[in-house]
Image (cartoon, rainbow, N blue to C red):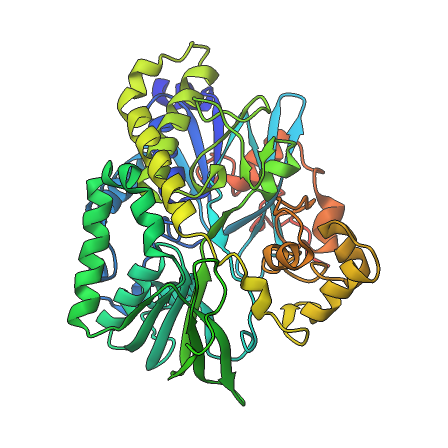
Length: 500
């Protein structure tokens, strides 16, 4: 009973996102006395990096599609123990659309379930954002054809559904994600016709000191390259996809070599037949929730200090949201953020010596990530391949020509004005997919767009948001609360009002 009372009075931390950063933060904070509510949109922990196939698929060796599997097993075992002990409440399938500040803390607003219509509110004394990142995709003629998927989408189909996106694939774009995607597809039985990477090998030579400082990462890359060689995958470096072909669906792609300035070299175009193109150009941080809270954003990432604190008191951030750098960096940042939150919410001054090892790992991984980000930059003149007929904003069907006319004929000088003149970015994704492309075509710097909500929200949910007090929120959201099923707000209570 004493332990239960102590836990009920413990400071409450809401961790949003159950990927590497969120899991590391949850374990570090809960082990140091906080009551942690881990809120995640997926039905299982792990995030995109540790994505698991559904149990019903009966995967016999899920580890075959992953690396760093032992790290995942340790994180999963630690989380299970903390949930069993009542130190962590893991809210699955909860899609967070907003976080608001209250007089004495925060409220995390989420939508529950696959239909995302049932509102849930989670009160907390502090919030830790581990919202991850999403893929950056640049348009080219034919990129809207069925059969063209993002590189991460192809990996998600394989890891989560044990499904191949097609029989013959081309993996293209730039960024370190291309290697594991091509390797995974080839290992699972697809014929990978080519790996087309626009990165210039000389860029890696120029950054060799930073790269050599992380020999483990270099060994990982060499491992992938060796596996691709065994599968007979052709690698075309400093090449790019200039067009995708097909009538009802993808039938092939045209690729071409790039010159030293990042332009297509004349006379180098060749066609490769395929039914799948997995394409990506790196990752971007998810910053919507941080922006809604008023956190400082540096270009496209959440700004944090040495403790992973944002400039908003009571808000920490870790992982890809603070800058894309991979799982190892996310684990280090999550550990630091969780420890810092635990000590500060418990009224203690944090001692950085307690996370010195994680801080060293963070510094090294950040230097490595910066070098990789520079080396894997998209071709400087990629916009020259976007014809005036190429759809740039898929939601609103805005073409490259419309964006260009907004700049040259109507005088638009920033992305927001282009959006107002063309509707580019006003659709379902709110510019998450087309934002980088619109900025590139308009000649504007790429910045994080400010959005009031992190995902679409039904009007009925907005009308009811914030109507529950703190106790109602806690009872509604925590199944282990003693009064959970007896509270009128609980959907199983006989007095719970029917949804209109």
